[in-house]
Amino acid sequence: MSRAIGLVLVGTLGVIAHAADASPRSDPTMGRSVFTGATMPHATSIDLNPAAIGLGEQNEVYGAALLALDQYSITPRRLDINTGMLTDEPHVGEALFSPGGMIAFIYHTDTDGKVTIGGQFRTAPAQQFLEGDAFKYHVNGGSYRTWAATVAASFRVTSKVFLGVSLDAQKSFMKMAWARDTALAAGNDPARGIASDCGGAACGVANPGATELYSIDASSDLFSASNVLAVNLGVVISLWRDTWLGIAYHSPPGLALQNQLVGDMEVVQAPRDGGGNLSGGTTVYVQNPASVDAEFRTRLPFDLDAHVGFRWEDQSRLSNYDVRSYGSAFATANIPEWQPRALGYHDSFALWTGVEQIEFGQPLRFGGRIGLERSALDNSRTSALAIAPTSLTLDGGMQVRFNPNWTFQLTYGFQYFPKVNVTDSAFDPRDQLACEDAGFDYNNPACRAVRSGYAIPTAAGEYTRFAHAARIAIRYHW
Image 1: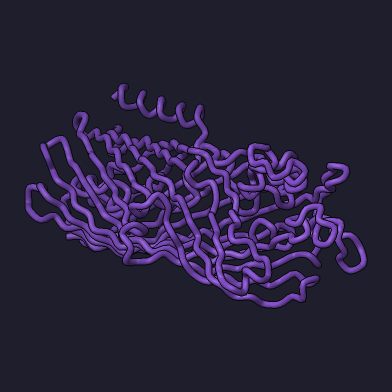
Image 2: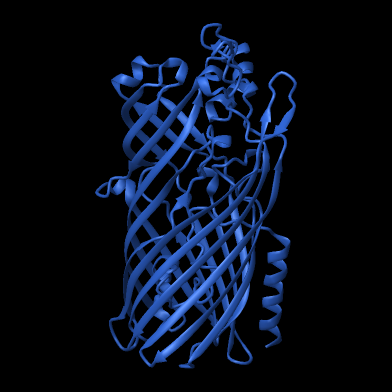
């Protein structure tokens, strides 16, 4: 018993010592949430760790509604390119709500649990993009949502080892809007650049008269294996009595290096160019991360289980949303063929620990967890499109049993992101001018910023974020 308690304390200290961050694309009600995890025979393990569904003894049908709310408080800053001085802009506060849901089943094909199968249809809450005039050159509204259908199987290899696999067929939808500073893009060109005329004065940077507006509506192809298929591989091992270790690997969706979302692009030209509407096509390339989930679970006194969980994601793949445009109307209006929407994520990991009551038919069951998620982003790369500093997570949940076959589950998670004060932003319009002065030598640091999508109006400012996530579920089991 002392060994089990010691392991929990070590896990807790590890959480405190190593801040971590789960992917912004992750479902916050899976893994770190009470009643879920890589060793739990829960419906969420169909994706999280398919081996774990074999640990249960009952068949079940499961349905859940997911709710996510993100609260943002932002004070943008404006950069004077001549003096380098930053000036606070009016404060922006916004709350973005997104629902999700899933239906699933788990079925044990024989009484000794050698083979268990499962399936689900789900959508996690969408990633909602902030909208606001103060940061429109980075993002100005939209969302990114994925729907998935999954089949899973768990195989009991020995009494102590379970292996599992699940296959997702996914379809993603992206809507996104942003603005482009045509004067800044033209640099020092006397006819079109920052010194050119915008309503009787020099355009400078971020002048509304030189601002083009963009919006895209794109989706992945459901019938392209190179685009939509994702594999989850897992193992659960019994270390000793009532003690389990689960590990699972999640591949990026698609067999290609990048996922392609294809659709339409709409452009409203800058007022100085007549403000006309243009239409064309777009392809968005997204390099989604792979990830690993792990959990250690062991029995404590008073019918409690201790959980220590871990997640790693190679988010460094997700450096930008790579937006390409095409169409005859775009070519004649000098619409750029390539506009990367910079993200700048780096690899992240999360750790959490907690306790919950084991299930033995009781009418009420409770649990709670605490964790830290390491920043997925350097502060200098923070923008309205990507806000992911080191954060604290708190999760709790309860289960109500109506009768031997029906249970209701409610879990809630809170995530606190401390304020990020960005004074030296990686987004710097002066890099556009410096690259031009360097003769567009792409070995030059300023030109690398241009190619990466950072040579646009600054993202300096103060950013605070709070995230809430809830899962409301009903289970019928027999």
